Amino acid sequence: MNTAIDYKRARIERVDLSERTVSLDGGIRLSYDVLVVATGARLLPEETEGLTGPGWGENVFTFYDLPGAVGLHHALERFDGGRVVVDVADLPVKCPVAPLEFAFLADWYFQRCGIRDKVRLTYATPLDAAFTKPVAAKALGGLLAEKGIELVTEFTLGEVDGPGGRLVSYDEREVPFDLAVVVPLHGGAEYVGRSDGLGDELDFVPVDPRTLQLPSHPEVFAIGDAAGLPASKAGSVAHFEAGTLVHNIGRFVAGQPLDASYDGHANCFVETGFHKALLIDFNYETEPLPGHYPGPVGLPLLRARRRRPDHLHLRCRNAARLRSTSHRDGVVSRE
Image (cartoon, rainbow, N blue to C red; front, side, top):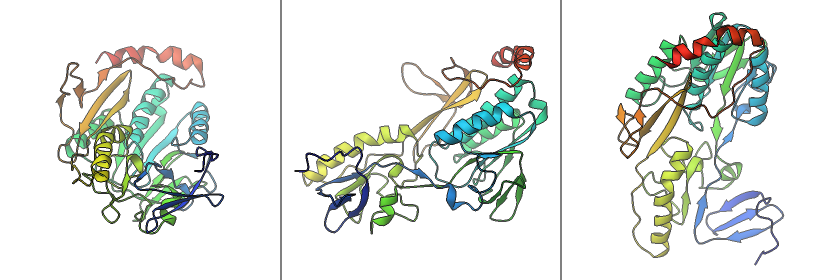
């Protein structure tokens, strides 16, 4: 037994599916009877031409990692007008509502700073609408329109020109910017790509969408962002997958047929600004619908409602601007 191994610090090199072993750095090999891949997703900004080149960390940022979020924080404090573009490079990404939330909260922030009339906000997405599901796409697209946020669809990012302030899609359309907030391409763990037969072209594990089992190697399962499923890469998905995964591992070990019980269930709270949020809840077959979530609380679905703020807000560069425009929060939140 390798009792002295610090598994928290050990790095996975590769998985040998034929021998059922996991190789760690330092030449350590672990055998397994059942393997669960739960190593999440990683950012791949270097896969987009120019994204990490000149302008990166200056007028081009991402809030999907800590250094990017801190840099964007300071950039927003200095920003006094121009075109802000929120762009999703390609799908899938972790928490697909987060870029929309940023756009909504940016509208609120610039209003609080008293410079919203000097800011042109644009949301660019590779989708043909604001979101993947038609009803939700209509509702969320409507919110963008209400807030005066331009929506650019079917825009798959091919190149970033930081010095020139241009985002260029693969079909050569251009979106100019003064400040770009880009959600980079995502992929699975690097070791998945080094392990023959384990991952797809983006290094996610292509498990069965109902059982979470890898069809070609039934002793392998995946959960959460690591799983190549037609489901949202959100924390709620891992939560809802967990019951099916645990149950199916037990059935696999016992030699019993697996339960095809995971239905793609996901839900997401969406911050919409001005102390409001909405909830979307859906699965493979059912898209988010208006109404109320079933249960004792009955939370509203697809309707922004006032909520208690539980996050910090950026400070405006000019505190006097904030004081002179603070009444706007009260007006809007009472709508």
